[in-house]
Image (cartoon, helix red, strand yellow):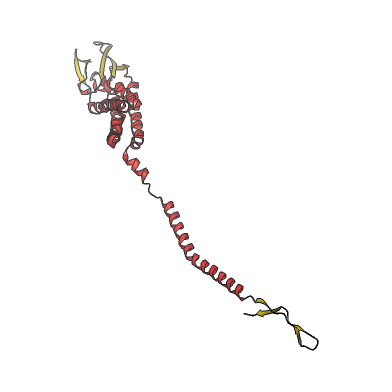
Length: 282
């Protein structure tokens, strides 16, 4: 957060300390008031309707008081207020991060508060920067030397000669607008890092939701499992039938055993008996 309050300081410092100077010169045709220089000064908070200057009246030997137009203080002060409060909060958050880390993480209150405040400041920086950029464009239009010369009565006469000798420098205010949008980027980008510290992100990581592809793969696995479960009983049945057939074949083999031997002579009479083999057909 240290970089946040640095850019916040740059934003409101370049806007709040601005001082503009404009100088015009009026040369009357009758030479009564020749080469009359008029200095016009303005600055923050840009209440230009209160800025006035004296301009000569060439036809009369006197001066007229002229006021600029427009009140642009609301946008400028809003931009300054956002910058100051952003600086104070960034400084406070840095102190808490460094010295009170345990209290910051206790009960997840610190990250939640930080997350909400970061979103608010991101939105406020965006609104204030856009408003200030538009307001700065209007200020440049009002303080344009051509526009200021049209306010002077003597300069509206073609016989008189009016010129602008000095114009305001706008580089400082242009820089403040740039710093404003830089703060928008910084605070908006910091939302993600602060969100990761909250319990909402941790809860989402603990219970992740399945994507559509994960659901499809899960249903496919379940379908394949169900099909394999239906095919398995048939395979088991075939295996059991094969084992039963093998058992029956093994029992259907002929069995032999030895008996007493019998010896026959030439006249087919039994002379003696020896070991005999009997075949038992199943």
